[in-house]
Structure formats: structure tokens, C-alpha cells
Length: 634
Ligand code: BF8
Image (cartoon, rainbow, N blue to C red; front, side, top):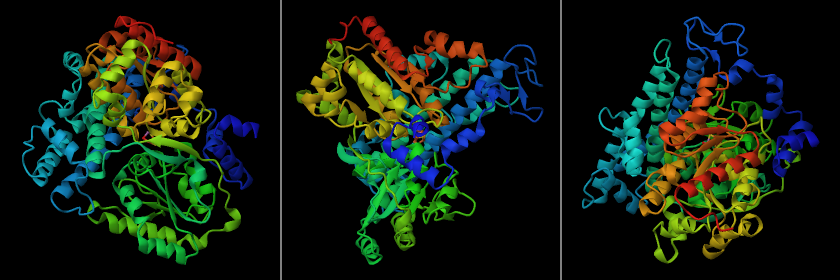
């Protein structure tokens, strides 16, 4: 058990690992062990597979080869490798955004009847931003807006429309550096082109291109995804729910939705409550249908419907290992290839739904927005019919679950904090100005099997709220903290400093606010921009007493997120795995030092969550000083 405790601090996860061991099923931590020692060149970012004269590697000790066959040195190789990660991460978020934009287009033209405009207010706000006359009928606005949204992806001239949401000063910085994002697809293509053999050999220029590519994600693809999802699926409002593997229910047909794009999972939520399917479940001997989420899809349906969350990234295999999951439906991103093998050890049906993400030999029921509800019903029915195949003797669901409150958006957070000012950021700004609130922190990102699961997220967050820093979260990081009871208003009493406690008490919010899935990091960008517009906290995002971190990051999307936060002016720390740049001292020094003079923010790498919180707090205090604010009150 001591070995298990080093893998995760989460009790449900520990029990799941134990069950896997007892049943001799290999899971992510076993596979990591089998990979060790991992490739040192890869870890340092100095292995190059860009062309077939390689693979080349640079000797980090300075004795062997210092350039690849083409002449690329460590700086070029490490920067190119990093740049490719940014491009892939940005492409994942942005392609998600495109699919959502495609769905609203189909809806506007009457081809996707299961969707409609749910948040008309937001539709109009967006339409105005895109220069559409909002006096027209809703249907016409939707048609015109959806066309313009799709055009953002292939835009050949001009900047992305959402760039205007950033403070003027930030826009000027981007312009001066030539990193204002243009078409979303264009930035990703240009980034990839730059990394082809013999194109960009200047590591600083590669990072410039990388920042522009990442900005096209944060202020482009991800922002489109978030805003359009709110329009067609509804904008979240605070909602209570439960989290952790204990949300799986023994007597029920358990369906897990896992992945990222909420277009299908939204329909699955409805289909799971369809009387015909509930009746079928009862006829099969179940008490009903229990739909739960995993990873970012979980965050989406949690935010909008209060659907319970079964877990974060490192728990996906463990959900199946409970023996109680009839069906896991997946779409795109963060779905472990190992799931096929794990599911085959149980009765669980794994179902892929995206033409972009298949497994050989796994049932594929392709999702089409035109037949959304029908397809969702087909998948849920498949799960219900599988209930009779469950082996009751192998069912063991960890009893651990925790309450949480989610559903905060840039509008809701600040409406709530607005108090009598309602819907203005003034009280939030004033709380920071007065020092009752020290500042803000975005704590986001994944789990990583190399780190003790959930420990880094929860430790850094506890340290921050103790020092009166309001924490904004998304992704698997939010799920980690929710499992440890940090996402309920009562957590303020136990964990928050006096100033933050007073605010949480007054308005009834948790000290840690769940803003949604990873594309919803765009909500944090816009909220910060609106704080600048409110006044009193400087002229640029880099002036706000705020910092960001991804304590347990692993995915390329996290790299893109880190880059767009940093390029927006937010000091950002990556957790235990540095960005695989350490093989190039020049590049590492640039990212962690000189960039601050270029773009007003820089990165840090840190493998100690206490130290990470200290660095963030020191940065917040430095920003307070620069604004001539009084020191934090408590
Ligand atoms: O988009 S936090 S492990 S699930 S990449 Fe993946 Fe990381 Fe989780 Fe969501 Ni984000």
C-alpha cells in the first residue's frame, strides 16, 4: 500500500490501483515503470526526428556531437520540438472549436434539429462583436454569426476578432512583436512549416511563432468553443454535484462519457433520462441509468447539468476496473489507448464516436450532429443492454465521493462577486486593491503518472488560498481539488486565509472556482481583460496581481495553454516535467528570463508544490507593489 500511496493521494484511486493489482491488470503506473529509464535525450528536448537523416541527438555533456546531420544545434532542435507541441495542442483545442462552430452552422440552417439557441443574450453579444446587426430575427443572426465564426479558422486577412477583447496595451505588445493571431488554421500551419528541416533556425523566432500560434488557440479556437457551446448548450450557472469513482452506482446501468467535445455528451445526458431507455434498464434488472463524466467532457456536463464526475485523467482505467461500467463512450483527446485492453478484461463496451479517433477492433458509432439524439440513444441503449453481462462478483466501487460546486463563468463569477454593483468587476478589483484579496491564480492542467496523482494540484491550491489568493480552475486540476473538498463554500473556513474567507462568506462561493474544461481557460483570459477594463489594476494583463500554473501537466494542449497565458502577460509555472527544453540552456534561459522583457511575462519550472505557490505569491506581491497597492491585508 505504501507504494500505492506514492502513486496517488486520492483514496478512491488508491483502492482502484489495489484492485488492478489484485486482478493482475496492468495500468498506467505499471506501463510507466516498464518504460523506465526514459530517454534522457527526449527529456532534454535534444533528440530530433524531423527529417530522415536522423534521428539525431545532441550530447548534453558537450563531448559528442553538438549539431545534427543538417547542422541544427540544441537550441534549434529543442525550440522546434517545443514549437511542434504548441501546434498540436492548439490544433486540438481549435479543431474542437471548429466542430462546435460547424454544429451551430448546421443548427442555423435547420440541419441539426436537436440543438438550438439556448443563450440568446450571448448570441447577441457575440454577434455585435462580429459586427452583425442584432436587430434582425434570431435565426438570421445565428446564420450570419456561424458563417463568421467558421471564417475565423481560414481567415486570410486581418486579425482574429476576439483579439479585440484583450486590453489595448496587450494588443499593442502583440502588434509590435508581430504575434497578433490571424487565421486559426494559418497559425498552426505556419508553426508546423517553421519547424520543417531548414526553415526557422532561430530559437527566439520559433518561440515568437509559437506564441502567435498559442494565442490563436486561447483568443481563437478555445474561445470559439467556449462561447458557442454556451450559446447552443446554455451558459453554466453554479451547480452542486458529486465527484470521484464513488459516483458509479452498483444497482444502475453505469455509462461513462469521456473526452472533450460536449456536443454528443449533451445528447447523452438527455438520452440517459429517456423514459424508453430507463424502462429498458429496469426491465434488465437495473434501478435506472447512471450517466457520469470523465475528464473534460465531465467538466462540460457538470457545468451545465450537474452530472457527477467519475474522475480525472489518471482515473479513466480505474472506472472500468470497478467492474461496474456498462459502457464508456469516448470522442477525442486524452483517451488512453490502453482502454481497449482494460475494457476487454471486463464486460465494459468501449464505443468510439469521432471519425478522428478510432481504435482497431473497437465498436464505432459515429456521431453526426444532424442525428444527435438518435445516435446518443443508440449508444445508451447499447450500454443498457450490456447490463446483464455484468459479473457481480467483480464489482467493487470505491465508496469515496465528494460534494462540489461548479458552473462559474466569467459572467457568473463576477456577477456573484458584484454584490450590490451587480455584473461589474468593481468589487473584485476593490477586494484586490484593498488587499483583502491578495490576487488571483489560475491552476489548471492534467495529471501525470510521473507525479503523485492530485498531490501537486491540491497542495499548491491549498497554499494559495491560505494566503488569500482566489483560485480559478479548469480541467483535471479542478477535478483533483474537487475530490479533496476544496470546491465547496465550506472549504473557505477550513483552508482559506482571513481575507478570502470574508469574501467567500459574504457571497457564498468556494475559495476555488471551477470554470470548466480546458477550452474554458478562455473564460479566465476574458475575465482578466474585463478586470483591466474596470480600472484600478493597471493597463495590461501583465499588471494584474495574478499568476498561473499547471502543476501536473502532461498534454500538448497544456503547452499551448501555458504559452497563450504567458504571451497574454501571465507569469506561468509548469510542474515537475519541465518543457523538455533543458538540453538548450539558451532556450531555457530565454523562456524563464528574457521573455519577461519581450512580452511582460515568463515561465518557471518547479517540481515542489510549496515552492510553486511561494513563487506565485511572490509574483503577485511584486505586481501589487508595482501598482502601488497596499500589502495584502492579512
Ligand atoms: O483538456 S486537463 S488530461 S482531460 S489535456 Fe486532458 Fe489535461 Fe485532463 Fe481535458 Ni486538459
